[in-house]
Image (cartoon, rainbow, N blue to C red):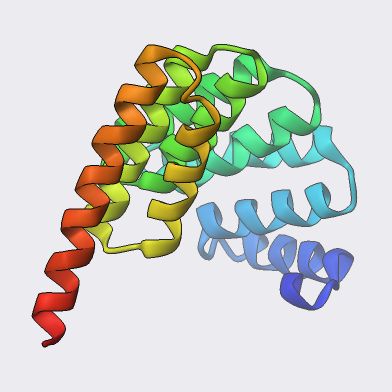
Length: 171
């Protein structure tokens, strides 16, 4: 229902399932997503918080919570939520990339560059070419500093080696 834009119906259906004590975590995320799509950010955050209280072992709840906090312009809490998501799922390139974007938006370019680099390395392990390209593009933006340039060059070398490996595997 969410992917069809039926946000109120999705919220209603998820609340109904909650009454049956079914899939509490997932239903709270659906309710939060519905509220976020309706620009009801306080309600979204409330439901994401309930979801992570129900199951704090999954990174998705913290990732969604960070989006709600961003919508409320609570950058500090968004960063904390993403940091928690990284601690739960350290192999996710996407979470590091999201945290890098926030740091870059705050002109914390050294920290952003480090996170973009880590995201790119993880994307290579995931064989996610789109994420590799996104990390390289972001690092190129930050390559005006010596540190940013060094990380850009290092990731570019690793991406080229990955590309050659992929071409050789296909041959």
